[in-house]
Length: 185
Image (cartoon, rainbow, N blue to C red; front, side):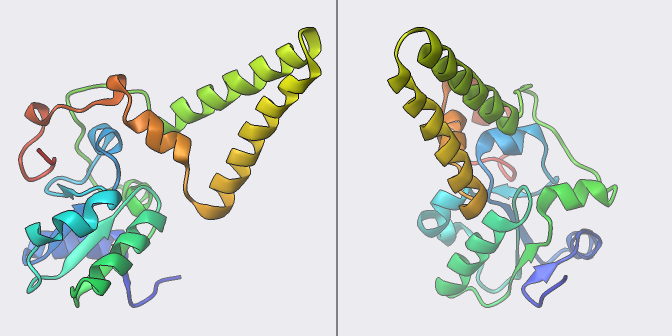
């Protein structure tokens, strides 16, 4: 359902074509490098307060993320910082792609962050299970730790493991591969 603080993908495409608005992508650099809307300024959610001075308060600000949750959080932060016209892309870049709108990709091919999270959790659950059976039953706590982490991520929308993996060397995106308007320095 569309709310006043949201914008639908086709509405955003029309607004970008008409000009006069700013689009910020609040995902992590590795996510942005995988796929992004051309002209979107990368401003990760954790940097919104520190870098909001890079935005023009007199122009509408359109916010996007992967599926909409981080975008909504960023829009709330921007409103609290004095931005009056802020709208979140409903459904994030996933909805943008579903609407058949064009996306740009970075020059560095990186395994999607969600797959990295799934592989990491799967590995540690399997390892914990094998260690529980063959070494010591207390290794079950490793499985429980990752199970609890998955539940927390599902309930809160925050995945600490994804944030850690996004900072790993293989996920580093160098600023030289992207234009100044679409990546942070």
